[in-house]
Length: 85
Image 1 (tube, rainbow, N blue to C red):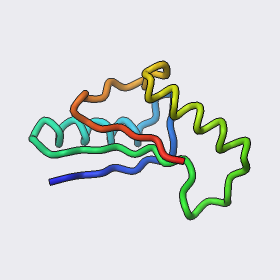
Image 2 (cartoon, rainbow, N blue to C red):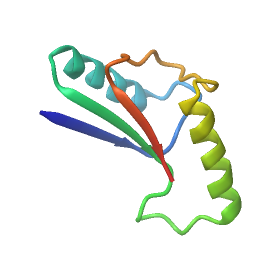
Image 3 (cartoon, rainbow, N blue to C red):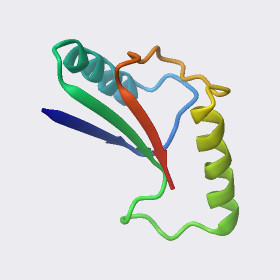
Image 4 (cartoon, rainbow, N blue to C red):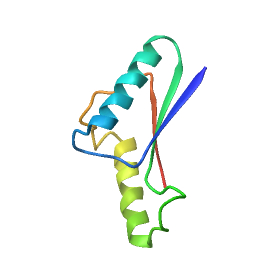
């Protein structure tokens, strides 16, 4: 079974809700589930972002994908982590 968690953007500092999602994802992944975490910066319920915010988020997503920005919480390598614009 595939399980997807959607979080509102990246955070470089410890946040309780993110930590719980990462822990659940790790647990489910260890039980054999296909787990994915999506960090979605711009959700349909938010106002439309300007070009500056889109560029900043795109750069952060790119650096995260290259592992130049490391999360504060160790995420299981079996979990697919994505950033979306």
